[in-house]
Amino acid sequence: MPKLIVSIDGVVLKEVSLNKAHTTIGRRPYNDIVIDHLVVSGEHGVFHLQDGGVEVEDLNSTNGTYVNGKIIQRQQLRSGDIVEMGKYRIRFLDDPGEGEFEKTMFVQPGAGAAPQRADAQAMAAAVATTRNAVVRVVSGAASGREMALVKVVTTIGKPGVAVASITKRHQGFVLAHVEGAHPPTLNGKGIDPFASVPLSDGDHIALADTQLQFLYT
Figure (tube, rainbow, N blue to C red):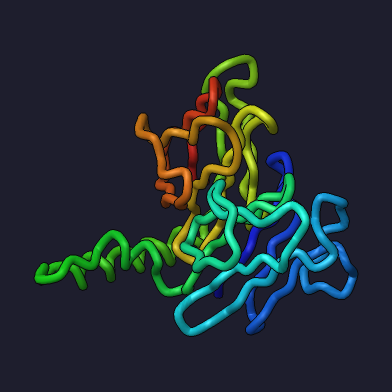
């Protein structure tokens, strides 16, 4: 089910599943998602759930609605897109529950081995979601400190400098960029700032000047 993760200054405020045809957002208390802040209009926007996906529409708000930094009136959303309303950031995640990453990573037209690889990934994901996970700091004064990933969404980093999120899904855990000029790196490689990437046991994450490691326990 598609969902929205609402945050401000790197702090996650709420997670909302899109299970209605139209989900309104704004400052007024009758909205489906209420953000009580003057930068958000009383009736700021609406998310439309359709067969073809999810669209966000601005309802002639005072400060406008932005998707990935560009002002919009109405736009189709892709998983990982960032909707901005004032200082509030709303990450859209399209979680079909049966293998978003399997489709992305393993479906190769004409490759006969793809079904077996997808089945293997699904089995590994089923095992992964039954295990506990932590993020361990491996550099600096806090080296050795661990944070248990017990919530659906855990944010890491320093607000205003660099923030990332680790989200628990049916397939396991995924890493995403939330805030900062430079997205985190995973095993030495930069990640797409508008997408989520899966995490594996032992992965190394660099966020600003902090080195971390993702571990199953």
